[in-house]
Length: 137
Image 1 (cartoon, helix red, strand yellow):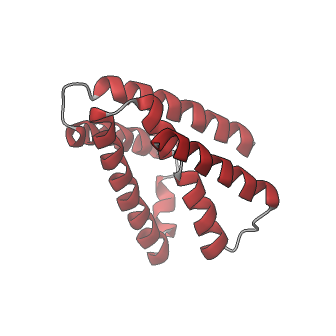
Image 2: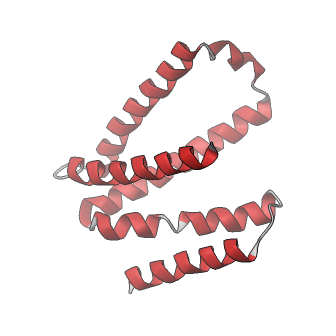
């Protein structure tokens, strides 16, 4: 099932990039990020409320909260820089370069989560790096 969710994530990320580029036209990227974040906030809490998972909030540990807050800060910074790039650059170049995050995820997962580094994973990461170098040159 994770594969379907990952493919849907990729599709909606692509749609997000196109809609964001069109939506940021003529406005400040920080304002665009704030509007987008408000929509995400309402959507996420709506899903939690309507799915009946709000009661699980009591199960969050301090570690859960700290890590999720740090993740939220990282997400916010990522979006701010993404929208700043969209203000002046081509989305067809920005989005693929942004996907260099996949390589950073791999490296950090190998180091901190002790996930296995298979030859396929490393080869895929190197291809992403090569594609990013081509786009940036």
